[in-house]
Amino acid sequence: MAKSDDCVHILQGLLVFGNVVIGMCGIALTAECIYVVANPHGLYPVLKATENSDIYAAAWIGIFVGLALFVLSILGIIGVIKASRTLLLVYIILMLITFAFEMASSITAATQQDSLTPELFLKQMLERYQKSEPASNSDNEVTKTWDELMRQNHCCGVKGPLDWQEYTSAFRLTHSDADYPWPRACCVLDAKGLPVNLDGCKLGVPGYYNSNGCYDAISGPVSSHAWGVAWFGFAILCWTFCVLLGTMFYWSGIEY
Amino acid sequence: TMLPLLLLLLPAAHGTAQLRFKPTLTQDLEWVTTASTFVLDQPRCVFQNYSNAVIWLVVALAKDISAFNNSSRPGTNETAFQKFPDPVRVYMTLNVTLGSYPCPKSPGEITVLRVGSETSCAQDDSRPTCNGPLPGPGPYRVKFLALEGSVPVAETAWSDPIMLRTGTVARPAPHTAHTLRGDGGAGMIAITTILSILFAILLAGLVAMLVFWGSDSCGGSSTFSKPESVTVRRYNTHHVYDQPAARL
Image (tube, rainbow over the protein chains, first blue to last red):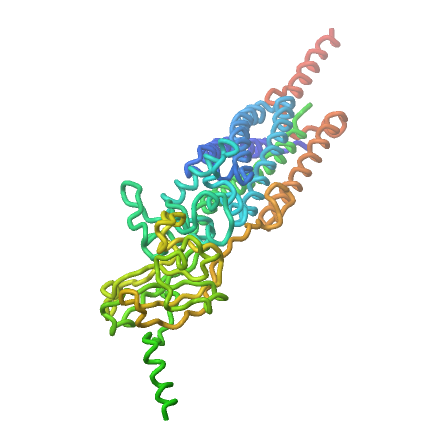
């Protein structure tokens, strides 16, 4: 009771198509993860300070998984066309290993997305920003990153300038409250980087200081990066699952 | 009748007009108090009758206002900022002439006084009228005093107690970022469950495949033939060759 050749050819065609899609998605995943790792928003020091840089680990894994998927998809296409049992067995085993890694990356990115809270950043910022005796280079990095963040996004603190008033901080130890109710970077700055109106900034006159918090500016990009890595990875894995099941079925039907 | 006259004369002899104005924290700004400063509204249109006077701000801790005597002179050791709050209970600062408080106030202008803004003279004993940062959270009460020369001519009422801010230590949310099993949202749970199920199915499939490979029986009746399959033709040829050999 031999199935018609058409059935075989359809299955082969589907598997080849499936592998082509996997290959392309692998390249796309690599590109996306390189983008995340390349750190376009300069947020890496702040995230590292909060020990919350799992998103970067997930992205690094994603780069290698993407390349592996591309290579394995080529192997898969060759194996399907040649109907070789050994090749396909190797393909399936290696794909399962890649599947496991991508699973880890995807879950890590999804967890990270849920765990970014303002309180986390607040504590790190208050402890490290402008620390007078920086314990390590990362403290300097944190200060520089926060300054850049506040200047570029016209924001102050995590939830607002009141963070510097309501909580004790390393900044407060070296800068008197009367002269620096909040850091100078919170003031509206002119082209030279000096406050437009220092007294207005110190008083809190609207228009001379940044009154909104930076949390949105941080969590926005990181959230979307994490979302991208997690859910794109998940989609690829679902597709890969179907292709692998098809390949296993095909494999079991190949003549011994 | 002499007594009532004397009593009437006494307040006049005192000489200092008691104005009903009470200094207040400004309403124009969002942050009116910090840990060591606060912002008052300027006393506009209050001291109009005293065009020659110099207006001083008198600051004291709320519990010490009874220690104030309007014959205290500013710029002396008894009212020096640098020795506040002990032994100086009340200090005087922010002296301006009436010209600095024009009346009426121009609309749209923010007219405020920031108490505690001068940090440079906070330790400088040669500047007893320094408007230095306040040394604690308070509560403080203030009033304005108009002096002509060294004679007090008018004073306002004491303000309500003004409490300054104190900082607390920031507390992060109880869960930390490191635990994978942390405050997982719906997304994380969905991804983990679905992917685990898929992975388990694939592993089961792989195991089935390997077991499959061991046994010939199911694999023998192949449904997919390899590209070169000439079994049938060979059989025919063999049979044809046999016949002539048998006849001979």
